[in-house]
Length: 287
Length: 287
Image 1 (cartoon, one colour):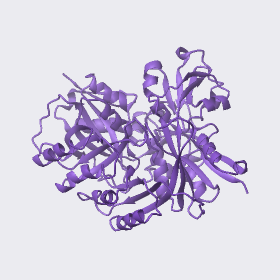
Image 2: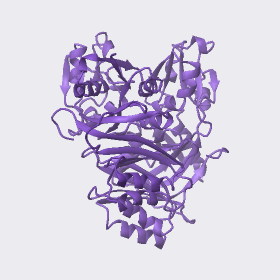
Image 3: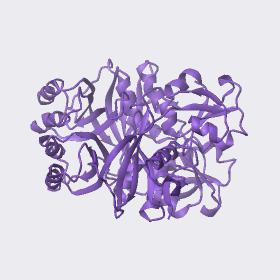
Image 4: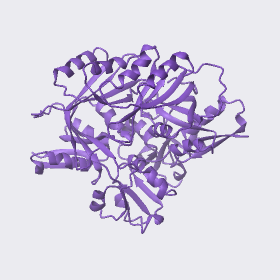
């Protein structure tokens, strides 16, 4: 049976590019179907409901930080686990039928992409109207009718939608990467012969007292387990109450991490494990 | 001379509402001018360049979390300090000339507002197109021409733009609040007779080793200083390198906090203090 991979669409997004990179990792790549969805939340919910096998979702960009809808939805849905992380280099281009930059009056893109090019936009297109869209490819189909509009997207999208490239590598920081997670239902069996390098988890704390977060961090520090990331998100109960998302550089199956997690559980209110996985750098550029 | 207050516009935004709440705190409120700007970054840069006296900017929402552009811009601009924090209850309404919900095909709003109403939208308007805008009021002027469009904004905006309210209190969580900071240039003298309750700072760490973040947190825990918030942001140098933003529940002028900050400086790479201030709850509802 074909494996279905849900991702943010329409076709040509960076999420689709990450899904294709994941597909390259699979042995029977020809038996897969890519399924574009209009939002990241819907992508994850589709997998939770068993309507797709895996979702490939952005979790963090090196410039703009967390993709909070991914973290919040993962916390909300009980049954998902991370299978793999993929790091994709991001190089934005300005696509348009305009004859040159002076002719542009409007630029469309996803808010993250607009933010990643804000310095370039201020320098070269200071007077254009910036219009946020739900993905980097959503506006591309309209550019044929709007000769004075442009959209920030990828070179790959330029090919797919047959659009001229007016400027390339317009992101403000050259080392622009996005990390994606490949997520499946928890019940899916994983065949892994190698040790996983990363583990992700999240927790809420019972009370906001001095040092409440120190103890959970100490548990890992004492064991020499590095945290590659800590992110706080609101509990949504009241202002000032947080969840904490941690990425550990260790495998949850090791006895060291298992003892740390057992101790951590004594300090947390709710503790959720999102699984252990490896990280793959896609394409050449190191991030 | 009149005092100028920069905020995200156009008129009717929650940021303007916070600016008016700040104005109510001032004794000579009649000598102030509200200056709307098209983006939060421009609002802060205007103050850094001395073109406005203060900026009122959102920093955190109880449901959607950090307003990252505020944190990133504050880190980037050297000369700004926080004067005051304001907590504003947020109650979203759907404004439209449509006869009823069934007639709506498009809903505009700022991505944060769309996210804060996503459950309501899925339940009552599952098939409409959601169009993100740069502020909650940007699309309001177009609603007169678009009888099948709606926009998520405030009751106050409905009055200002003379728009019918099709649904009210549509945010998914009733305890929806946004915290704003009132920011001025560092050189502005503050007359404060009372002790400040909060201090904000941010730092980068020299190396990513196990426990690198534990030590800075311990410094405050050992002194019984509560952290009301910790937020990580990318350094924008490479994926996996972070800045940490901390809010302390203490005054930076106290000897206790001064000793903590002196010790903290020995562990950090770059340390920036954004000042001490009080927090004001505007209107009745507690968050």
